[in-house]
Amino acid sequence: MKRTIYYFNPENDMALANFTPYYKAPAEIVRMANDLAALPAWYAPKGSTIKVEQDTDIPCWTDLCRGEIPFPDVEWTVHWMPGVYVPWGWNPAFIHTLVQAGIKASSFPSAEAMAELRRLSGRMSGIEVLRSFAGMKRICGEACICRSLEEVKTQLELWGRCVLKAPWSGSGRGLVFVNRTTWTDSVVGWTSRVFRVQGGVMAEPIYNKVCDFAMEFHAEEGGNVSFVGYSLFETDVFGNYKSNLLLSDVRIEQRICSYVPLEILHEIRRHLLEFLPQWLGGHYIGYLGVDMMVCRESDYCIQPCVEVNLRMNMGVLSRIFFDRYVHPVSEGRFCVEHYSVSDEALLFHRKMREANPVMLKDGKLTNGYLSLTPVRENTRYQVYVLIE
Picture 1 (cartoon, rainbow, N blue to C red):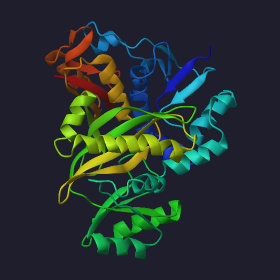
Picture 2 (tube, rainbow, N blue to C red):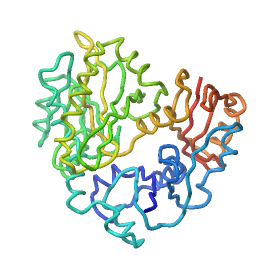
Picture 3 (cartoon, helix red, strand yellow):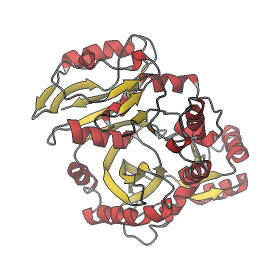
């Protein structure tokens, strides 16, 4: 039986946008990848292998938590070993790394499959998903592809304010919020650069957002798509991901349905389960998330496709973590944190661990703080959960 090897490569979206075998991630993203290299242990199946860059990336579970937590049962390696690789996301640069390490081509997508994956991963393709909801009740959402500055200005005049999006960029990145009075030279320069590099810009009206959530799915080898669960998350004013709420699917539905009827939510899910297999066309296998918003217009409605993430994502990870490790009646928060200086993460970790000891019931978390990644003097990125 082949070894299954999981790997965290958070630069995936940028590497997919670049789409060359020789893409090099910025130093800060490399640092994030190293600090958070242990993350796949929390969603990989029992007995999987987790690939990290160095021995210090391997967590000592007892350092992270004082308690009888059923920690992940996985193996660790710092080497590129033969096996079936499951990265955070596929891109040509990661495939090139595997080739250079002598990994057989049967372990990763072909060049043709990667080209199709890049097309589907672009925000332009996401418009197809959004438009498939046409005519459905309590649905909002509009998007168009602009190929010139004149087309962008036309949409801006029509909507009054809009968000411009690069077709390929990291989730929550490559966005510019603009209105008629903030259409400045810097915005024109950014838009022109995206035109030059990526061929177009996405334009969408800005809605009165109430909350962010996602529906998470898994695409199977035979083309079927299954529903994995909900993700209720928070972003900053610029659209950058901050955290996930750790809740059961039932409780997430209850929160969303304080704005829209449950049957609307279920109709959206049924539609995606029918539409996604034909949209993917068998070109993608793995987890994917469809980001959505509850918006307040004349009435509350749902924007059912803000974007599609054809890769592993924090929403799926937090969903799996809750289902595996958190008691179903408990709630909490799944946080990705960045620290500006050395020792800041370690001081925070020690303070939180002391103030919020882990408590369990039936072998699952009911209260407490738990870091999911190693914390040391030089740590700048951390993922932790706080259960209440």
